[in-house]
Image 1 (cartoon, one colour):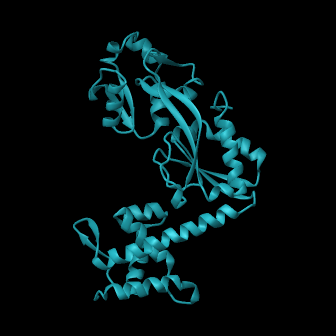
Image 2 (cartoon, rainbow, N blue to C red):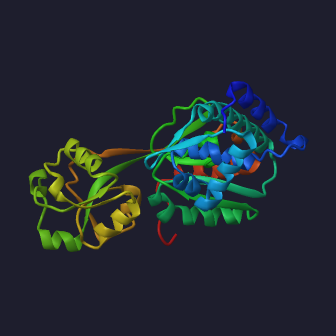
Image 3 (cartoon, helix red, strand yellow):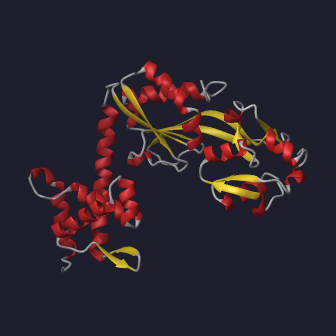
Length: 320
């Protein structure tokens, strides 16, 4: 297929904008192209859009056919945008941002207390704290359905990955409203069974031969521990993963030491704080919402409830 240049692409973008006028252009195809371009592969885009890879591939192929241009070419196992694809991406991305802003504005004006509210939290928070919060919200606003997005990555509120986020870092985007609602501390913990087997740990030197459970990457864990004043090496990290909940449960089963916030550890008498004289690690809680969504009645209700819960002396925990 011959690439017809920027005039062709601009005309195609105009067709997208006029889709409601009866033209055959499919915005779902444009979204499939946009996510594929941003993720770099059909498989990653299919996962992000919760569809099968063949379906996504057909949507991108349909867009290429509708526009009479080639958007991607394969370089080995990688997808590369063609010059026409790069031009198209710029316009479709701008359209996506515009559609998102329109959606945010419409959602922000909604005054119904019926509907979904998506809250993005860490996996630890999702497992141990959110069940009690959801139960309270069910009593307060039974028509609101809470969607819990459990992810240790920072959700993009501007792209509506979530309506509200509980984060341990302050957001930097100007369109987000953030409120610091809690300041907790992190410490080093081990199960009683592990300490019985390993022996007493009274000084940082005592952990030189101890086993550690890593959360995040091995390099991040090692750097964090060494900056904390613990003389360990990569050999001490006997298990590592990106799930804080899995790391905590492995430590509870006697597999090693793990850092954790006191908010969670206080509910587990089988876990003991190790080296309590180590400097406490600050664990702030930032509650974040998009500025437009802050005027939505149902989202404001959930936001205000989270403010109240996170402001309590103790967070709700397992079994509450």
